Image 1 (spheres, rainbow, N blue to C red):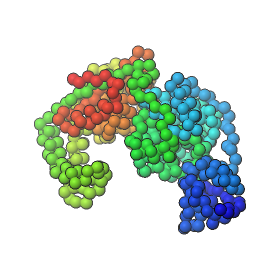
Image 2: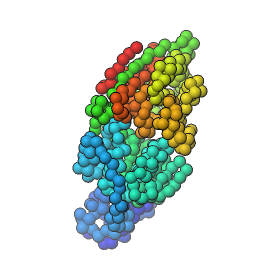
Image 3: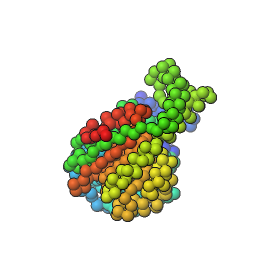
Length: 462
């Protein structure tokens, strides 16, 4: 095979292109495909390190315009102290060529592992997070240890830095322009990826070193996709491994609460209307997904009515009369404790906030207000918060010791995250988690399924 000289590798809107000459046969190189629209070889930007290594191994002259020279090291960081298992996680990631996923329970200090990795490398880095609340938390944490100003993309700000933290959505929008700037990519709550919805964000970045953080890894199919985008699971510990030493002990108390007569009637009517459409579909389409069903259901009036009935039943279970009364009793019983109340949706959160005069934290609350509220909770000015989903992932609420899960967690992962809000250690700390379950409804089976992720927990049924 004859190869030409003077190939040029460039970054182009989240991809890599090779020019000069364009007719070189490069089908052997990882990620490269012929783009007939512009008569160029093109690959996703994530292949940069692998692609340059392969071409140079073939002794092909390559003018790399993407990363023409090694990045200059930043000044020394303030390195965080690490617990033994955090050192183990960092060591495992280093041995895996600094590509992979670290799986640690919520409250076990995944952020600290990532900060230690950044302090060790001192290279341009992008940290991507799912929410504005996490954006503020990461920015504050990095600003304490990074010797240079930390950039921020999201929540109305766009400030570039050698180290930059961004929301998923902002990073996705800006990656076609800035995807060649970073050597390190940190993905917080990495389980959001691997399903195809946001994966292009990770494809458009050239970063060679990649670290994904999660408390709950995704299913095998998504995990296989993440292995290509970020790396394999390189270190994993569960609640049982750390409970009592590095995480607070906790008691899980399930309260099964009956629906009243009117709620029972409405629930059964809506469930019957939904089942009349869903069950025939499930029998005829084994192995189909919820998305498959909703796509079919939306095509008919009967299907749309079934989906509306399902949504009504879900709203009803999110805050029944007995659940509202139980929340009040728990708040009274634990007047000297710091409490977090989790709901299925914003409507339920606001209803509890109005009834109990406690502060809601939802996606509609702006960043400065969230920061003020969380600070007041930490210093004791507020003793309880109610949230639909904002507090699920990563927000540091170290003083909480009682949680009330009113309903609506979508699965085992979210359940683990919510309980993890209480598991940050404290002297003599023992947390209590109340899960409110409507008896005789689908919540009973869902609760059993979620507990599989908490096999180490001591559960009491009252």
